[in-house]
Length: 321
Image 1 (cartoon, rainbow, N blue to C red):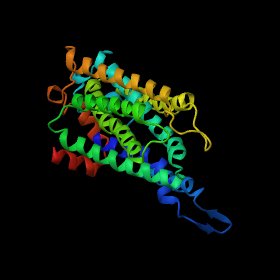
Image 2: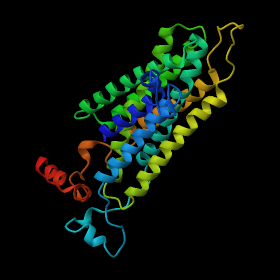
Image 3: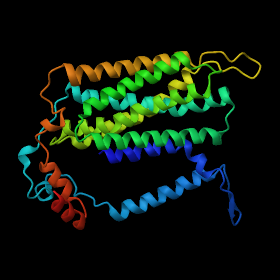
């Protein structure tokens, strides 16, 4: 799960930073010219085709989910572990987290460019290098989560992510002026990149334990993905709505950068931090919010998942377990 989050957050940050890779592309294929302006789209198209081919060749579809073949598709799997999931505080918190941190990430991607252009006069290529650097920060943090998750609970990472979110918005709200130093700007965007890297994999891990064994896993997982998209859409829209006035070349630049925008994200960050502390640390619950308390490891869900892997990989998984 953490590895998937690592790939996700890398892709989300590398998208805006891709100009740093494609800026020097300039060649023609017949009458079709590929240059710095259309090369990002061309590269993404190639990646999409490669992904479609890979999925078509590797993914093994499960049998249709209906009453006539349900027993056959889960042959040899104990059905006693199948259960329904109650809509509890920790489960709602997972949905809230995914909305907030995708919202948070969307604001980072959207607000960085206009601030850097106005404050420092940076070109799109220079801004791309900022995003590439943030990608490195996010990757290193996600690897840190992967290594330390063996002895650190998901709820700890979620609270630390909330603290980083509050710190990032506080720094930006207090110190961001259009005549700020480059160091002030870099500290702000670096802090801003940390919460999602810490929260994505931990939130997904917690969510997976909460819905383990449920007959509604597909529905709930789909809902989580939908809410992630909602957060990613709302973030840029909030920036567009609340960015406010940017000084032009003839105006004094000692002006606060988007104070209303940062204040709104600060409030949201504070709410998600309080919610995680309350529901994961202070309020008693019977839900498996701690990894070592989960009793469903190696359950029927794991066996079914293994049965959907290609034969060679299934045998390898069984041997390694």
